[in-house]
Image (cartoon, rainbow, N blue to C red; front, side, top):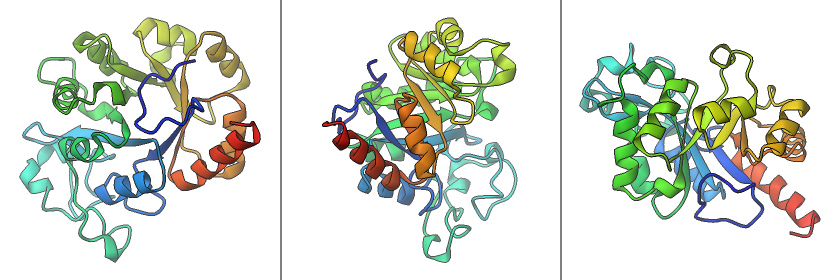
Length: 265
């Protein structure tokens, strides 16, 4: 099945090595250091999370609050970008990373353009009942500005976000991140059909043989998170996934390359 996005460095194996929040086993997650390292390690895509600052700037951070990954406290949305930019987003991981800051989505797009594909996850906390001026519209406009539409896969656990993105551009690639509650018993095929999604993203723990048969039969690209053990990487690849999110993109790339060579690729 074709991949939903174009890779800048496509080796033809129909599989995507994705740096989860960058190379986050080795660098503080969702920072430029982690993203650059993932690229240097041979990742074909970088996954990141975005929220909005108080003044409506899409910023790259996973948690709704600043407490875990910065020296700030409280909710991201309560700070302007100027205030967020002053925070230390690296020391929690190690003193040598104290120079790291919270990037804007725009900064990451400038870095990635012409180099590496992106999976931009829109965090549920930033999704509202309004499409106009929402995080989807702001993020989409930036992707368009940097001419990266063909190289970006948007995703969200909030199914409203998936629908909004398709309203903005029917051709933008969107992966539906499986959420049991919103899914109401539907499996990959029903969900992808219902939301006109281009890919199905879920935890490797959720990706059963039954789902694999369903997705393969329906030609649905599947990406699973977050796999850091070599044994599980091999298991998921054999189950037919099209990409894996890993904190260790270097390890994943080595395994994929070896499996590809052994098949005569």
